[in-house]
Image: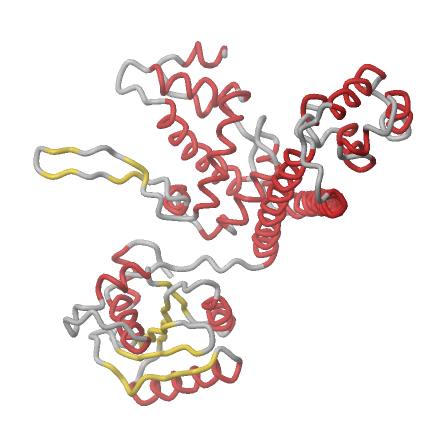
Length: 427
């Protein structure tokens, strides 16, 4: 399938059968029409199972023969994750699958009957009509190593989210039962602090011990960073603690469970990162990308998990649009509004780029020099945030070029053509 709007429209010819599908959890609804909007047959309701998918194909083959259509294009809304099974099934059978923006369906459903009524049958018809006019997008259905990366990155996000929740719950317990703990340890995740929570987490446990006994219990687990001075301070704050003194038994059980979960998630995250790194290294151009100073393999994994195979893209602007970093303008007559990014695209990709560009600006000499130029140039200088967004687009173009050509990063090419080229090269 092609990329531009004209090429999308040109895909719909008199010999094309358009199939609009309204996707649901258990049953989908399909309607069939030609390039002029003339409908064939009645609606088809089929289940989200293999026999339902086969029923759909049987209907399509029947309508094709009856109306002399040699090309079929299926379209649907990306409803949650329910559309993926059908999309991958149709793609495996060699059919063209496209997506229609749910907002477009919502805004155009009154054009035919001047009624705000919503039902599955009507939505399937509206989807087919939008496809007829070329108002669709081609989904990036990942396969192979890219599909593995997307699942791995999704799992990584879930583990990090759960880890943050567990960390918050542990701090909650400490603040309720032993708030003075942080007067002794700046961070409970430190080695000495963590083992303290394991052995004697609450003031009532510490009050029974002398500083020497506390130090003796630390020594098998922590070799440096603890001494009699810290042990004495721990005992002192425990004796003056304002922590809650009731419900201690199950509070300890809760803390032990939370610490176990914390260690489990940390271990799983470390194992997953190691596996993701091995997968990333197998992708053409990924090794050269990780050689860019300040760019981690995690960012590269997120990049490929979102964009997939770079050979399917013809221009880096496609990646900019995919990330939602293309600019939108709001103007009318003499009024010219502020230009902003569209944010219409893959949110996770946009977030990964923004989180990656900040350390690059801080530590990579090339991006640091570009950021300085963008924010201090005499003609239309950018604000710092605008410069970071511009550099996100620049980074996308760099990754696109490296992925396509498998070449090493050359910072001088990015600086080429700038007025302060000599000063920037020196930097």
